[in-house]
Image (cartoon, rainbow, N blue to C red; front, top):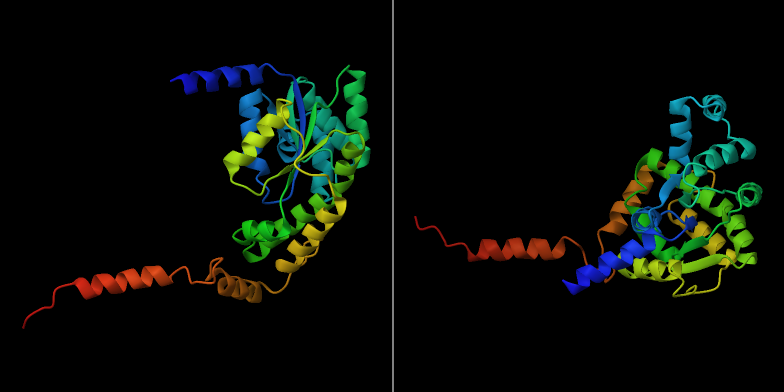
Length: 273
């Protein structure tokens, strides 16, 4: 009971904090899960760049109409227009927001900070969820099946690789908090919570080289480059099936199950004719 009361009290305190957060991380870093937790605890609006664009197009705002024309022509939305879409949304929740997928480069970061400065505001936290390449391979293995999913993963990796400049930008301003997302979700969440409450600092120093190496390793594992090209689907799925049959210890996942079935069969009473 006391634990529940303390939990509720802590959550209430967090919800009153002013938080303007940028969350960064590779595909498979747990960014979506932790974004949800952060927004729940700190009362933030989750401003995921794709959802913000869709909403602007749906309501038919001037910026949304322009964005729609670029998307119809299969062109990238220019930095100025994307920044306008995001800052318009930020204006609806100026003191409690979490940016996911924005800014995507230093130009957008500059425009974002200029907008916040003009409104007597600033980014309070910039968090990067750091995951080793070996673990990212394993976490993305189930997702990267079929041509379409491999194209999506390739696009996500390209975006992540491009966003290194944003991390460097905020690292130079001593605002980047690098948190190891290697452990279980609850441990990573506690670390994020401590950082956001100013009770803890980064787990490690930021390294752009490590990120580029991780992207290269992932691209090689899934036969992708950062433009989303990939090997033949059939050979990829065949290799995946072969590798997925074994766990970390090299034993087949189905081995224990087959043995248990054998044991059941052996225990069945013999039929007498």
